[in-house]
Length: 356
Image (tube, rainbow, N blue to C red; front, side, top):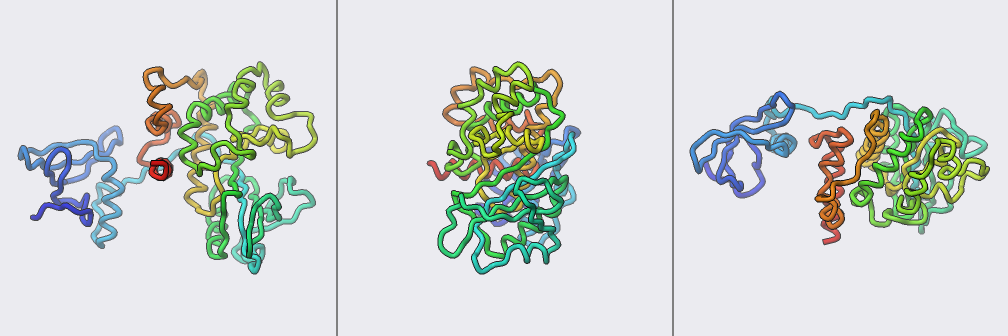
């Protein structure tokens, strides 16, 4: 059998190709008791059968088998899913560029999405709200809109909405954002502080998941500016006063324009994550909702405050934030072979390539 130099049949069973271990032939994929994927392979250099961690094979082999129309081995059909320990309850705000000749509201209604037109854009309603947004730089042929979901516990309607947006020619640009709210009514001061501390700890890395325009702009400022104020709050009431602007009647107060916005707690009982750039991609949206939900779950861990990055790793993290990716995901309990982990890592790697 010929040695494979290209990627056409890479990761196929019984094919031979080059690795740092020498020429090897994958024999079978196995699952250990710890749910860690391993591969059994023949090392042609030593003529011995060995096993090793080749987790990346698990999802690449499925792709390659499907591409070639060959049944996927049963041993690689294992699905890695993220389990939520806390009920998911979220809301999204999608800033969009809608073609002027498209009646998006009718299209969404025809797809089974409930659209409501409340007296105030801040009313919590049963259906989705589609409102004109003058802050978006729409350009010729488009109008800026914000599409706001009702509180939800699943992604069913969101999947339909994203499909309609794509089919309707809706776009986004750097003036668009995507915000996600999570309900946190029951959280105590220390738990809310953990949310801020976790995000601040990995902010350099989280930046790489998003467009550079979202690193620190007027609508989603860095936590650098407020982290000391957050940490200085001795009670939840003080936190709501100093960070959420309790007592101010205007929703659009400057205290809301940070990557994490606690002002929404006063109006909705939620915390808002504002850093994500505008998108209509279903996977990008659900990955960010999942990631931020896991940050909320992390905050609930009893007697487990967020620790700073070890001194030995600090310098490397500052020069290469991606070096902490595995540690960040482990701290959130997101297994690295889940789709969310893989997708977010791809976004990190994509931005690093652009910066190179």
